[in-house]
Each structure stands twice: as structure tokens, then as C-alpha cells.
Length: 122
Length: 205
Image 1 (tube, one colour):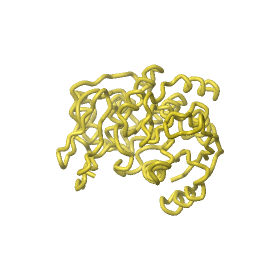
Image 2: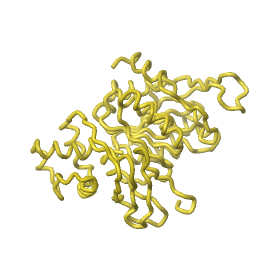
Image 3: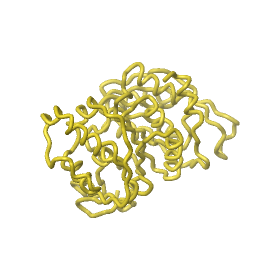
Image 4: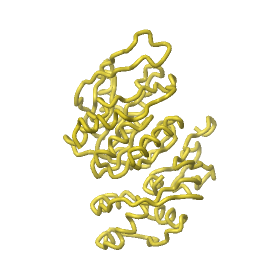
């Protein structure tokens, strides 16, 4: 699971009002190089929840992203490279996503988060 | 990539080894899958450089086809962990990266328009009525540009009405009609092979 996907997922356990962002716990991850595409990054930027991305990246030891970001930073090649790396090149293999409100854990095995809910959670 | 080449690559993918009838798991054949994605890309530019979600991805055929046509990021969603394992192997064999998520499409939270395009071959809703429309409803909530989906031709007017009136689609257009070969994979199938007419739709959310 890439951090871009993490940025899109939320907890939908019954009764939870704000299930985003899911807290990332990662015990293993891999990095894979992806072709750099500045246009894609610029078009994605407005849709990304920045604190969620920066927070998740920090959890796996990538602290190069600033805590806050705005559109003017997209002019900087250096910023785009870091954004690119965090968004697309890190794959979480094992760990969990934790609902920020209920504490419900969604395990990640072999890179696949299990977001299935139990009957009493729907 | 040429259409024939895409179809050829998809033809090599592994499919369900033990399909589950309650989930209406029919593999999306390489003929249909390659045409769906090829039209989405060549006619509308909805794939290359985009974020694409494959709803009910099964063994990953449509998601993998999206990656082959240049999608920047692809996420496959399915409720069946065994299918996702096969999807994962299929992607790895072609050295492609797609993200996979084990979840029920119905409980996928509406976190805004998080993808550009949704591609899907939903359960036809024959065994469990309305499941194809549940998929469509969620797809139209999360897609920003377009939703490509296959529905039985016999349900055409119902699909159009629901999309435009109930799910607020801006447009609902049939790109072509295809024959869906459903091989005899379940015991209740009496004929050797059933040929179902399906419409390939493009919806604009």
C-alpha cells in the first residue's frame, strides 16, 4: 500500500464521525523507484491531505516533508521530488491502520489493508 | 500499446481457481477488458497519468489493464481475500505495482472524489439483487472524471434512470454492446457456456 492510498482511506465503523486520517503503524515497507511526473504531482496536490501524508511518511522514518505545504511550493523541484517519493515510492508491506476515533485496527498483510467490517460495525 | 497486445497480456492472467457463487465471480475476459480500457484511454484520455480504481477487482484484470495503459496509480478493491492474492501475483508477474484493498464496496467511505476514474465489472445482481447498482452508486461518488462499467443489456433503462436520477450522473452513455461469455463454472449452470449481452457504459459523475 502506497501512502497515496493511505491518504484516501478512512474508517467507516458505525458511529465513527471522523475516521480520517487512519494512524499508520508499519513494521515493514519497501521502496520502489517510480518515474517522476511533475504534472501528476501538481494535479494531485489539491486533493492530498498534507498533514496526513507528512504524518504517515514520518511514521516510516521519512521526515523530509514539511509539516505544512501550499501550492507555491509546487514551483520547487526539490519539493516535488520529496512529494513524489512519499506519495508513490513507499509501499507499506506489514502493519496496521488504526481508526483515530475508535482505535479499531485494520491489519495490513502482504501490502493489503483489511478494511472489512464485522456485522456489528456496519 | 496496441489493443491486440493488451488483450494478449490480459489473456495470460490467472483467474479464479474456485469462484464463489454468492459473489458472482465471473472473470472479466481479455476481449472485454482490453476494449473497455482501450476505449477509456483512446477516446477520452481517462487512464494515462490518472488515478484509477477497480471496484470488485477480482483477479485484477481491469486494474492491470489500466496500469499497462499508463495509469499513474491503480487501486483494486475486493471483498474476497483469495482473489486479491491472485491479483497480487498477476501484477507481480508483469512487474506492475497496483495497490489492493480488502473491503466491502458498500462501506467504502465517501471521502470526496479521491480517484479520477473507476473501472468495474460489477456483480450483475442476478444472485443478489441490486448489487451492481450499489457499486455504481459508490463509484459515482468517488470518481471525478468518469466511471466505466458493464451491465446486462436487459437492465439498460433501469441503469440509465438510476444513474441520472438517483446518483446524479451528468451523463450516461453506452459505448458499445458486448457478448459476455460465462463459462460453466457453477453447478447450477445447465448449459455449457452462456452468452450474455452486456452494455459497456461510460458515466460522468
